[in-house]
Length: 160
Image 1 (cartoon, rainbow, N blue to C red):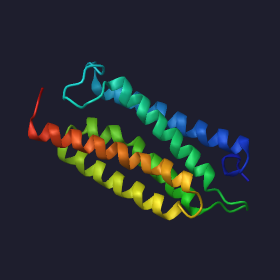
Image 2 (image 1 turned 30 degrees about the horizontal axis):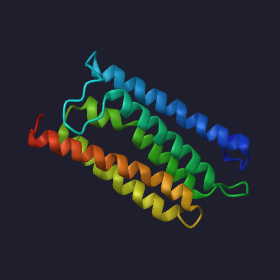
Image 3 (image 1 turned 90 degrees about the horizontal axis):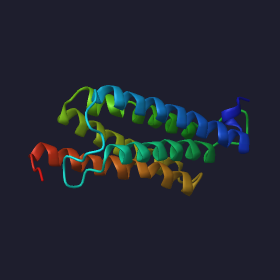
Image 4 (image 1 turned 180 degrees about the vertical axis):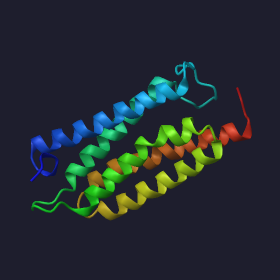
């Protein structure tokens, strides 16, 4: 059995490490796509500074790593919900590409809506296995919904 499918502290550490590495890579993409833009200065009233957004995403990725570990089965064959969580983690890793890289508010909003729906769907499916894991996965929906409102604010053109 591979280390990240183990239901022990080492398995938890492996899941968290994988999630952290993916978060670090996603944040590196954000810095590359911003091309020197000021990440610290909010441009809209409710937009947090860039470093806060990065910290939130790192926490969300760690939540997904912990949630995956919480829903693991005890046998050689892991629970399918763990694969769904890895899929959500990869979609979240693509977030900088469809929000910053494509520079389209419409695509960013659609991506946020799809990510929120997927995270809620996954949370509903894994909640019987672990309510804590479902709550951790749901945090992605909360964050991308907030980000979606920021995109709508940008589309409306309401600046401070």
